[in-house]
Length: 306
Image (tube, rainbow, N blue to C red; front, side, top):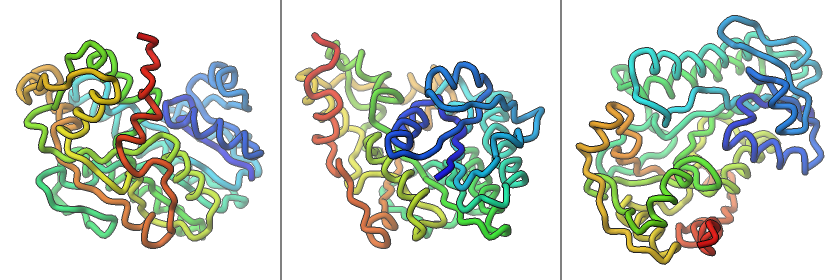
């Protein structure tokens, strides 16, 4: 298949492009720095500054699948008004332009989304049937509008999948930030530790994206989370155990709010989310359904070498 990937140099995108290449697909990418992306990924790359430019026609030539991962990092920096505008527009505007420029050869659009589309409070279990209310917070609005822009491709007869990603565990993302602290024996739960943490191993997430792109049954919103979510307290204990370190130093909620402002919600909200459609409709086979097995694969032998 001829596949175009945006956001390809990021944590998820890099893993995904690697797997697509190994499977024999013809991959090209859009990037703000095409020269760097081409060197890093070893695929044809095209410059695209989404805010000022239309999608380069050469990048779209003969493309059958678009995987849209472009978006400013939600976990970097305080959520100032300017930062929130950048996070929103980088997803909405880029998706809108990709939909508008879709070539006749396009068969499917697989677009990123996030579990932030759910309320993020309490213990209620959420699946893909949830409907976002008209009045919603920043994260819910961002994800709802992102999915709506991607769904515009359906008017052109193109199948659309929106991948609602949970906390991704791998050689990047949240785990990279936590490991130095936990290896020092200073890790522990965040806040009261009762909030639900919907996690997924990077290998399983790549598997979900590949299935969404290549399996014609996949459509609409899909929760990309492992089938066994845990509370943050249990996650901290499991990570400490995998590293053979104590994990009882809590990080008070007020400290995170002071340091991160509104962005602290990423760690303090409670997302009890399940992959209902992956399990019930598609019989997706997770490599890592349980947290201890996922952590054993990623950090069980302490890859720091200490």
